[in-house]
Image (cartoon, rainbow, N blue to C red; front, top):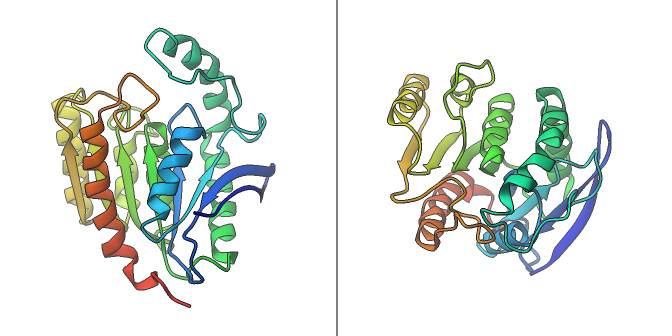
Length: 253
């Protein structure tokens, strides 16, 4: 499985990113994968490799690149409940600084241009996949690029419905991509209901699903939130979505 560590030009300088893609002399649909708040690290690289094995060119950018290459802080090998508060406290100022709408969308433009220019990537639409805060970023980018994004999948997104202007559900009217949201079992039912109503009103193809017995972060094998059966359910939902929406770009020469 070929992998690369890349430096991609953005409006604020080069961004480091991890890429994985099949070892075949064909072009493959592009997938832009946004990490959780802990950033690019071995568990995300392994997930990118697994997704690439199914026939996709997977790009995982470091959204903290203005602060330095990933990892931007020292992370424990396992981010347990005891370590989590300190790690989040160190990352929170970086999240607030680097994940403004202007910076997120400017970077996304650069990543989409990069994918379009790669000889291993088909010329058709791409998919966006995000975890935790990355799910919100994926939704925001999909809403900004309806002509480029055929599918968006988000897993254990936080703050899906808030009173703020940047609440995830407020982006939905701009979407044209097909959507799957895999929700943790600790979200308020009223938030899930409002999210479903917004998706129904937008008329986009979508599924929202609460993954039973899970807590926020359930796909991340290096955290205490990890749930192996929920991770498998995530693959069982994600792969058919990508196959439906990106199949026309698979295996072209």
